[in-house]
Structures are given as structure tokens and as C-alpha cells.
Image 1 (cartoon, rainbow, N blue to C red):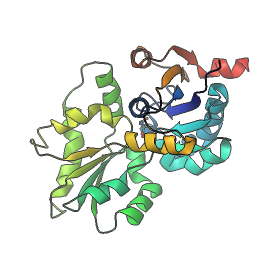
Image 2: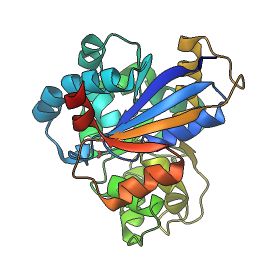
Image 3: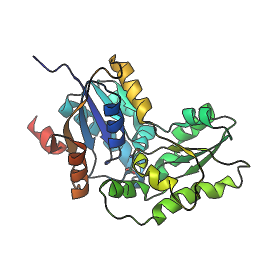
Image 4: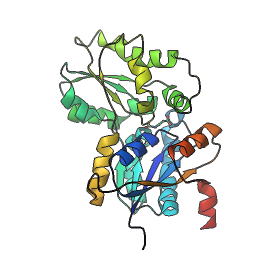
Length: 276
Ligand code: DGL
């Protein structure tokens, strides 16, 4: 009997997309999940837009071909806020893009002040400006793009020691703006897929001082959207993790991570493209 699981490819610059893989598994969808990380170019937060725009369509095409995915999830806000339309036009399967969860945050805030933590690139994008003006009118949105938080998240995931000042600086970047907001921030959007892996560290910062804020990550919403598009009901099965592809230059940290997560194999995307 053949395996009827629908194939999904999850893409990110590094290990951040694993937060979306975690949510897909938790949703109980009968999926065969492949992972692709552009390890050679990580972190995207440091890359300029022209270079990323030139790279992403071709790379996404390769990911879809090599994984034979029925659906692609660009689990990278930095890529999606720049190139989602271009990516959609370059592949023949539906694309679910992870973008900052401004709309749900605006619906959830009671104080009218939300924080947006993302890579410096995502923070500065016109896509992000548009999300805010369309979905958060009347809400004060404090934005901060810590340059080092995605890497710190990979280090935390890999159980490496991270200087806690990274997390303090990330929260301080939002909290210094709060004074001008006129009300306390009660929701923080984690608009980089790496950040859910450091939510506890952010919540425990001295800067936040034990205050309770709601950290919002998009994983569950992405899992719901994926299930809807594929006509799969939540809880109707279990996901299997097949291969994690990398683009090279990866550290042992990343390889260890995808293995710990349960991917059956790790392969070089370039080698698979050449073999085709
Ligand atoms: N995980 C990615 C995001 O959602 C980007 C991290 C990076 O490469 O800087 O934006």
C-alpha cells in the first residue's frame, strides 16, 4: 500500500522553521515533512534585499523539485515579507508564507500597545508597514529588530551557552519605546520563526521585570492554514519527518538540531539538484 501522506516542504534560512514543524506535528496532520535551510546564507537578517530577491525564487524552485512537495511553507518572515509574490510565481504548488502576526496581535491587545520583534530586515520592510496600517489602525506598534537574536535562538536550541544580555537588549529595544506609547505593551509578536525558541528567555528578562505579556508565535495559525489548503482535518493523523536539506556551510550545531528534531536524513540540496 502506498503512503498517502501529503508532502510539505518547510523552508527557512536556518533552524527557525523548526518552530513551524513543531506546530505542524502538534496539529496532528498526516503530512510527510521535508525541511530546507539556506545554511550557506544564514542569517538572512544580515543580507541585503537585492541579493535575497535574486536568490529566493530559484532556490524555492529547487526545494519544491527536490522534495516533490505538494505545498511549500516559507517559514521565514525575512524572506516572505520581501519575496512572497515572486516565490509564488516561481513554483507550481501553493505557498503558505509566514509573515508578522500583526492582525491577531491587534485583535488581542487590551492596552492598545503591541511589540513587534523581528530581524532588522523584516522590521524595515514596506510589507510590514502595510500589515500595520491595514490591520493595526489605532494600535500603537513598537518595533525592534535585534541583529543577534536569531543566532542566539539557534544556540539555545543547541544547548550552547548564550550571553543573557542578548535577550535583555532585545526586550529593552521595545520597552524604551513604551514610555512614549502612553500605555503598557501587553502583546509581543515573535515575527521571526527563530524567536519562539527563546520565548522563555525573553519572558524572564530583568528588563521585563516579571510583567506578564503575551508572546504570539504564528505556528498554530500556519498549521491550520496548511490543513485547510490541503483539506486535512486537525488530529486526523501524524506527521513524519523525512529529509532535512541544507545549502552548505552549515555548522555542526544545525546538523545536530535537525537530527534531534527527528528528521530521518540530512542531505545537501546542491547534490540532489545535480543528481536530477
Ligand atoms: N527565521 C527567519 C525569519 O523568520 C530569519 C532569521 C535570519 O536568518 O536572520 O525571519
